[in-house]
Length: 281
Image (spheres, one colour):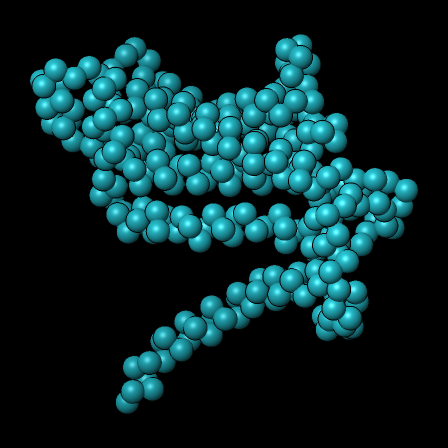
């Protein structure tokens, strides 16, 4: 019977629906609450308003506190994520290639240490990082946090990229060297185009990591001129007695929009990486 053959699919859809409903409900509540003055019974919106979105055209004043411009925070977030992505991808590609192709003393030990470095939680290094940034004059600067975050991310990035370089046949590189190309030219013009799915994946995840970063920014950024959107949200909930949930929902939704756009525009690259499986090139 047809319904017996289709029952596994029905069960799968039911399980998916039950597990994803709470997540979808939270996002729906976030959208509705951002455009409503009140939420009857906690989930029924009443009195449509754009007042919660006033941060787009003016600074927020709440409980005697004037919060910094949302556009300053947005620019800082893009700058932080963009520079982090650039440094992480460029350095990670060079390090990953060296680990995959070059033979040098201590190579195996270095790869083991690379994984070990990524295992250290960043919270355990906060005090040491504070002293270093303060000594270098980089405390309360975005560049200081960018360098710290890059150093923490590069070990895993290099390890991931190494896996893609391992799949590139040696014959491709030898052919380029025989034709007179330098090692750098072979890497840049021949090898890198073959690992584009890996570069795309690392780039996307690096940007997402920078956009969602909070701990380091909260610990080492104190001035409003360098605040990012993640720290901006923390400022809105710093006083539990003055939380405006409509405003908080609107800012949270604004914080999510770039990531939604990024996912829509890059999902083809992500699916290409997933579909390629072991054949990453």
